[in-house]
Length: 72
Image 1: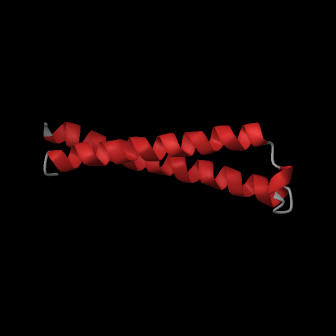
Image 2: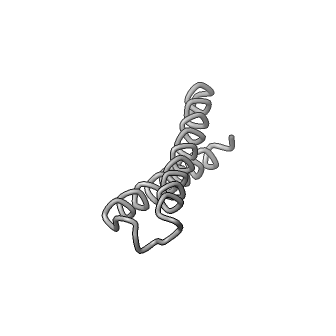
């Protein structure tokens, strides 16, 4: 893998981790708005956001494994 591709992959990985952190913050803010009563959260919204967090973390892990394969 070229050095430029390695740098782009590292930036992409940090960006995906930032997206996952932002989505987790959205869930925390929603729980706070409802007085920490998790039953008051819309389960569809919470489910979609949780699925996006899992997907982002999965993508970050895959990028990390790909970078580790090339010794960077």
